[in-house]
Length: 614
Image (cartoon, rainbow, N blue to C red; front, top):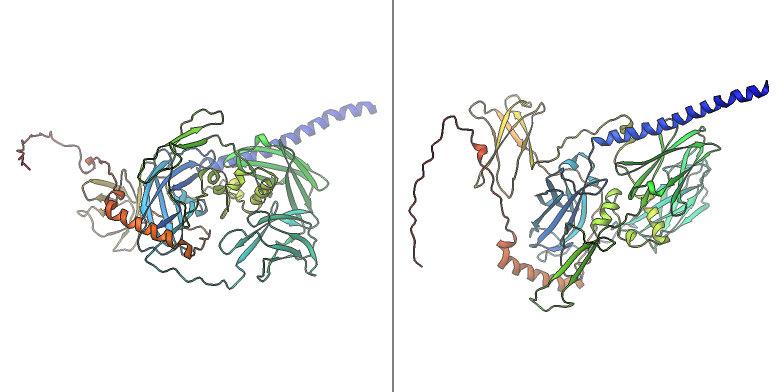
């Protein structure tokens, strides 16, 4: 009888195990489906701008080429046809604004550096109309230097404070009492660069030292630390002879989860999750790279711990997000992991001679090859500039920007370092970077609630969209369902029409709108003239919080400034008209005319040409 009972329990246990596996698979599927559904209607773009150099004199031309790619696979994206370029000063005022056309994700242009610009560093940023729906932190940004030889440099002021800041980032998100955590930190000087020559220590409320730390690279480092419930911890940082800076660590939680990620050999990543004051049950690991789901798995949370083993082959190249969910589908831990991408394209350049005399023709052969040596098609841009005390080698290149800098928050100092080096120190520095400057482009509450962002700006798929707002001057309210007309006077005749929506907004979908010019917008004056129309600025009015590095002129730059100022004046005198010349395409003028009601007769009139001998 006892044997019969034991045999009868086998199918019952198997059935419970099957239900449990089905529940796990269903939870992972729900998370993955919600994530995929959320991103199906949210296309992300990345812009990279290659400038001919990074230091300019007033009166020079800034040449650039723009690349527009999708944020996941980094392939050219033909969604937008216009890229906006701003040059901002340290007060977020634009001294230069321009728009350029892009086709199949590529476009090029130039801007003139105004002679009224002051000496200093500026921020060049680029974005599309579609990107204005998201945070300005996603815009492309690059620091450039502008020097005006006609203006005296500003006096250098001494800093009144130590001039550096420190931030702490517990791995996974929180400090939990009684659980050892890796705590990453970032020390930033007043010029937004990492502060490496310093030391720090952690003290409790009794002023007892519980941990010590030093930055590894670029002011970034990490240390292990086990907090105690009820204690308050403070960091004390000293650098040279400057006064010490103190900063409180994040509050210690009495209950929660702590996450630890480490490489388990060359093929796997081990994720350990520990908890205190939480119930036992299933924990779920969800991994995505960009907008692509890469892995989902479950592990039992017993005895206060759960362990996940993740195959590196499943991870996408670049930045991956590792998120831990509890049994209630609530995110409890998250961090980033970076997988170095394979550089599939090698650019080789060779000149026909090792050195040249003045006015000697230079021939440069450029080839794009894969690692097997086969020539590959590529769309490239090349700049040639003189390296002197004003101009250094530009470290901003497209490979490190797309794979690393564009997916992290804030300024990344020397992003190329993490690609050129692959030793143990570089791996540790890269992991510290993932802990200190990680972010994601969405909120999990919006994903599970399927709350799509309200898109106020349309992608400019055909051409430049000119937006306006129409109001009734008599009532002062918005005017809806009113047809307005936009015309561009000049040799290139253009006419467009638009109808206002319920908010009084007008959108004119233009095509081939090139060069400077004047636009005229009006309603049908034969029907009504009581409307007022405002044309809205197409440039973004949102700004990222990334600082602009301070620039100071030194005496060692004097000879370089004099030489470049002279060459700029000569170029503007003799070639000023040519370097600012643009070729404008012909535009079909049929928009001004309707199909003829009656047949039209064409008459050819001979014209007498008078020839004159010279």
